[in-house]
Length: 73
Image (cartoon, rainbow, N blue to C red):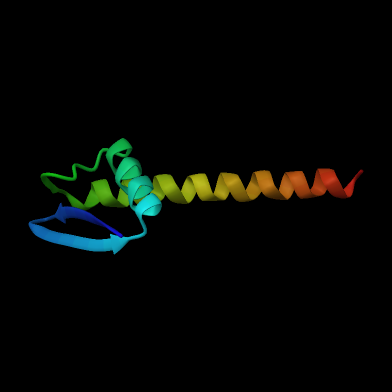
């Protein structure tokens, strides 16, 4: 287990996650512009969430398209 920690509006949040998931979360937060070692404004965290939500929606659309394609075979 690894800790994922970030500060938002002066409040420090830490959570233990499975190693590989913690690595993914840390990497994704950094790519979204969230600074893991300094204070962040709430809008950065919201933008990071919306970025992941968009990716998830795109993946769902791709999966549905693949299923439709396979059903047509």
